[in-house]
Every structure is written in structure tokens, then in C-alpha cells.
Image 1: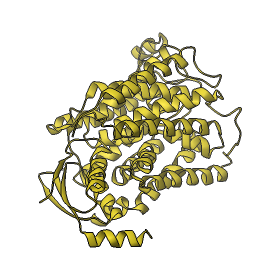
Image 2: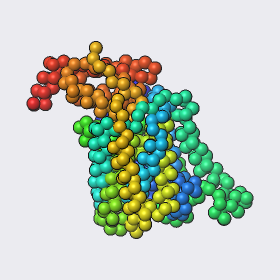
Image 3: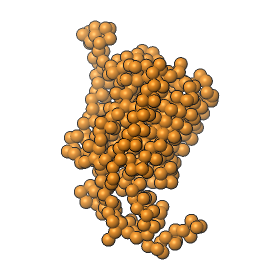
Length: 371
Length: 84
């Protein structure tokens, strides 16, 4: 056990985690997930929001087992290695709002940092402006951290509070499995036909594209396990280079991009260019600012969306609140024409990004605490 | 006995950032950092190793007291190792 912990905590461990995600994501795409979206935390949380009926965009609704697997994989690793710690109480509403606006920015760009790197590895060069935006956002976050920004300390809580989110994920898994059975009951078919019975699953579009449940769930469990041990975090990678000149986490990103690029080449999924890229648009300013907003929110909250899922799996209630903020943000983004599509930004997308930037910059400026 | 930084309950990267700030302000000497997350513990140990500080970790009730120490001699070795 100890050597596993030491190995995954080393540079080799972070390289393995990044490379594993880089290989698995294009494979999941090959098994049926949407293009350049083998794994995307933001997109998949958005699909869950749709499946639960929190938004009405019929093309992006599915209870993605990847999200469930990422949380539970991290929870298993945390329990196995004695790192499950129920904790909470560090500015939960601020974290909810940061999650909300992180999702706003992510859905204007169309992806979380993982997907930004996967899009790049699939030949979608629009990811470059998004990643430049994320760099700017994280840089701004680092500026605030240097000036004393803090969301304050969390406190230990009874174990129950830490288990609520992982158990909620098990609940979603049960819902996903039960839906297969319930769909055949005559009573529910009547409701389904009237569109009144969640979960809602897309019949076309990205939401309808998914790898077999067992493959998606198993792959995500493994990623969650590895990432909990190696502390894989895309935002942290950029932040640590800027803030403390530490490359450790950055090796994980480099491994992810190279592994995904190689796997895409082998699977004939590499299609270089700006135009005609799957589930992407070419409005560079909003790709930049959308990811800039998301990057700033991730930096202020202390981790990328994937890392927040792993922390929630370890019993961190504040990270769970951030995730729920993201899912709520997804509901709003699709209900209020904020989310982008392949056609371009939504009607209110740019306005929402500006509101989000005002909120996050204000948070960075005013939330200061002396340690 | 040097100063103590209580970084319990703080999110990434604050524990490691506060530790680094202290290292830069002291250049050598000793201080302790109190954290309650294994991630913060590992990050601080990694940072310390990179900066030439020795660490000793004591674990008690899921909290970690990390003692950091660097003498003048250590500093000169690090500077020479970096070619400064």
C-alpha cells in the first residue's frame, strides 16, 4: 500500500494519471462519447443538469456515469489510504457562486480545462484561445492570492456530512440503472410520452452520444482513484508554475496532451483546424473571456472542476457545494440562452461572462483575510 | 523555536504559499507549519525539498505539524548548486 502511495505521489504518478486520462478520453470517444469530449467535467455536469430537468436543452441531457465514477473512485482511494476527511464551512455560498460562474464561462467556451486540452489534442485550435484565456484567468487569481485573497478555513465535521455527496452520486447511479427498468413500466411510459418523467435522455445531439455505461463508469472510477492519489489538477498546474515555480502538476497536463494526441492519431480522430470543429465555435474573444472567467473562478476556489470532484469524494463539503454551483450554472446557462453552440455564442453569453467577471474580480478583491 | 503558521482548513494553494512566503522572508532558520490535509503536507514537503529546507513531520489526530529548518550552510550549498 505504502509503495502505491509513494509512487502515485511522485512525478511518475502524476505522469501516469495525465497519460491515463489522455488515453482513456479518446477511447471513450471511440466507444461513443461526443467528439473531443471523451471526458469533460463541465459538459458532463451540464448533461446531468439536463437529465434531472434543470434545463430544457433536449440535445444535452444524460446522467453521465463518468461524473459519478470520478467522485466514487476518489472516495474509494481516500478511504483505502486513510485520507477521507469530512470538512466544510469555508465560505460555501461564495464557492457556490464561483461554481455557477465557472460553469457560465465553461459553457461559453464549451468545455472544462480537461476538454480544452483534449480539444487541442484532437486538432481543434480554437482551444488555444481558450487556454490563453484560462492562463490569464489563473494569473489574475494568483495576483489576488498574493494580495491576501482567502475564502477562509474549513472545519472538521461529523463523517456523515462528508458522505452526503458520494452517496448522492450513488443515488444518481441507482437512478440511471433504475431508469432502464422503469422505462418499460406502462405507468411511466405515459409520463415519458408527456415529457414529465425525469431523468430525461437526449435522443439526438451530444447528449445521445455515450459509451457503454460499464466502460464509462469503470474508466472514471480508475481516473478518480489515480487522481485522488496523485492530486492531479489542471488549474493547479498552471497556478503552481506562476505562484511557486513548481512544475510537478504541469507534468500531468503535458502527459495528458501528448497521450491524447497519440491516441487520437492512432484512432484517426485528429482533425486539425479552426472551423468545423465538433461542439466548438470560432468566436475567439468569447473563447478567451469565457475560459478567462472559468480560470479565475477555479483559481479562487483552489482547483479545476475535476479536482473539485475528487475533493468532494474525499469528504470536502465545500468542493461539493462548488460542484452543485456548477450544475446550477449549467441549468441557468441553457435556460437563459447563455451557453454557446457550434453556431457561436448564445444571445446572453457575452453579457453573462461580463457579469461573471465582475463578480469574480470583486470576490478576488474583497475576500481578503489575514492568516 | 521559530514561528508557527496555522494553515489548517485552508484551500490550495494557501498553505504552501504561506510557507513559501515565510521561507523567503527568513532565508534560513526554523519554523513550523500546522496543516490538516495530506495534500498540503505533501506540497509543503516537496516545496521544502526544492528550496533546501529540512522537514520533520509529526502526525496527531489527522493533523500534521511540519518543522522546517535551514542553516546558513544549507543556503550556501543551495546557492552554489544553482550556480548563483
